[in-house]
Length: 331
Image 1 (cartoon, rainbow, N blue to C red):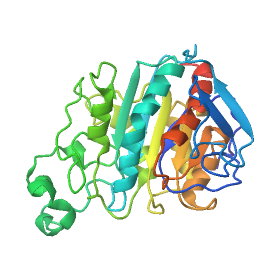
Image 2 (image 1 turned 90 degrees about the vertical axis):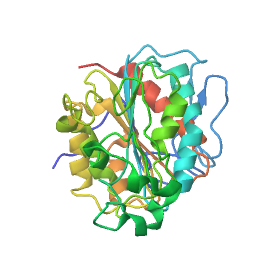
Image 3 (image 1 turned 30 degrees about the vertical axis):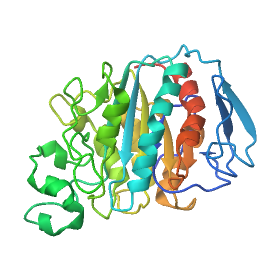
Image 4 (image 1 turned 60 degrees about the vertical axis):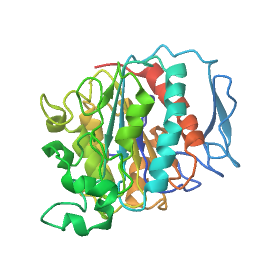
């Protein structure tokens, strides 16, 4: 078992899991959280949901809107819970995304060379025709039973694969047309906010036993990123990694927090400094997901999944991404 190393660089993995606990050793967002209050450009400090709310101890300023001189590429992985309880959280993520990506463009050198992939937390969910009786499931009946009648590919039913065809109750219920013909958003997307809103509106038809860590590990695996595989070309060796995961429950994943940590580091060729983990979680500091975030030290950012507005928490993360980008050494 590896001992958590000490890092001098940061890279970002955004995992929206559940909740926010005060007093942890990781960066923490929300009222009473410790860490850094971020001023991005001239917009002022982060709001009540941001790091360094009441009880915050330090402030970090990110220039005056100029890009840093560090990394040239960033890969964003969002792992989003698609179970029946996640409508509000998915809405909050989509609403906060435009401000987040605008801050990235204002402060990070790799403002245009990005990959953005959304993965859900199961392989298919509750609407497997012939197994659960698609038409009998209430989460499958929206939009004239769209999910029961649409045509899907194998990758649509593979955990960790980029989502481009969200379906079921509360979902986009359409095949999202992304520029570049990949299962992720990339440079040249004509409307990045609309594209993200389409793929991230996963809906509520996912399996009740969420597996965010299994999905993360699969999404970053060599097999999934190989030529002609589901996530073909998403993960780049010369890019900073940014992963976001949102879930209101854990405990169904295989392995341990150390196993998950090791898998992410291995995906980045052994460079733990190429990853920052941001987890929106509800569990206490002893939960497996909280332990995973804590393994990253100051590369870990713990925030509340139940915040109705994620804007402040995302704003607070910009300093971590900016510092990581400044110090990133491409392989």
